[in-house]
Image 1: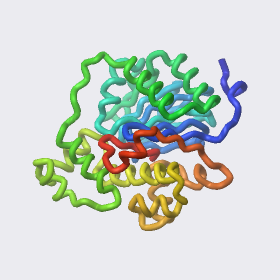
Image 2: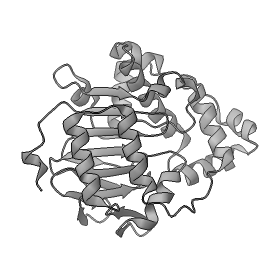
Image 3: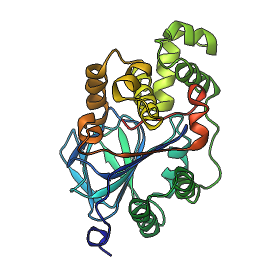
Image 4: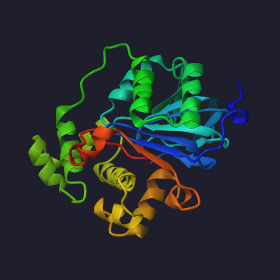
Length: 286
């Protein structure tokens, strides 16, 4: 079924929760993913392309699972897509990997994955989300199902030290808590914390901190702040700083999503608004 002829062109949607974030709508044709968090990308209509940045080789699928830090570019083919940022500690990734249909080897040292289980049903549900624009509670229940239906049930627990480090960073999101301070709090040396954080999350601490500030900026927008106030409260010096980091991490200018001519609908999971400073596994559309 070709949804491009059946799904109306509504404004894009951004769903925010303390654990995951989902964007549903069109994005620009090429999205460079090297600086991004772990993502699950599902096309509602046309096939997606996954391009290995080191070789230029391209792979085609309706869905891709891309671990954080993968040196790839996504060709959206001008499709309507569901772009899901998964949990930072890697639990979602570990649940999904064993049941993905294919492994795509990237630059001889890493891998991405294509073909989410029950792909046709997942695509249909993503199309319904874009068409009917349901609540955040409904959408994150669907995303939970996509991930849990893929799980063998034997997922390892996340590293408690990195979980605590993430808690410290997200609790004081507007402050640059030093790596030495975080390392001391979690019982690691600073070099070991830096190494283990990237090993567990796929990204450096600085990048995670900036990604979380983008998430908080979007959460502030969803709670009614002006764009300028939202980004400053989240820890950016001004809108120009926010815009530069947003483009660097997300491969999209914020003006393409947040301008008055192309507003997105922001939907926030209700419990997220009351626990903004305590988001252990927070994510951001970056």
